[in-house]
Every structure is written in C-alpha cells, then in structure tokens.
View (cartoon, rainbow, N blue to C red):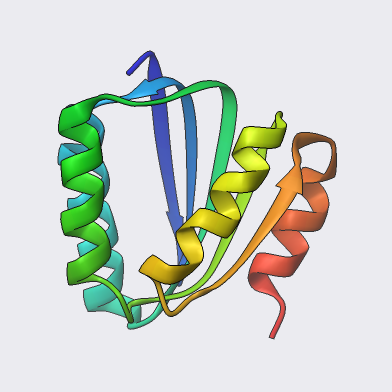
Length: 119
C-alpha cells in the first residue's frame, strides 16, 4: 500500500487510499471501523481512491472477512474514483453489504461528501 489515511468523525469514516491495498491496510482499517461502530452504531464510509491499483491477494482475503463480519454495520458507502473499473467496483460491492453504495467521480468529491452525511 503506497498510502492511506483514515479520518473519523461521528458516524462517518473518510478513507483515502493510493496505490495497492495490502493486508496491512486492513490491519489499520478494521480497528478504526470497529471503534466507530462501538461508538456510533451504523457507519457511513467515504472511500476515496487516487492512483489506485487494486488489492493484493492477502488484502482480498481480509476484505472478504471484513465484508462478512460487518455486513449490516455500514449504512452508506461512497466510492470516489478516477476510472471506469473503479465505477464498476461500486456495483461489484453491492452484494457484499446491506449499505447503499454509490460511485462518484473524483471531480465530484464534494457531492460524495454531501451525500454521505445527508439524512
């Protein structure tokens, strides 16, 4: 993983990822999510990707375990990306979560922020 930052505020988790997700990403991400779930219940996640190149095999396994464990803990998931395959990823995620999932182009980051916090 080239870079990650996680910002938590109330029931919203803003994750910024660049490069390729690794198992180490999930070692940081999962505890942050679980802490927010304990504090606020259902979460909304804004997942922002820049120069994103997918997952390693180990990260895919961690992602699957996360999805199964937290199926109902995410209320909304905004995926912000830069390419068509990232847009397709939003559709791919839908069967793995009960969350409302929506894709936003990186040029509409403000729209994603508004959508993730609206009632």
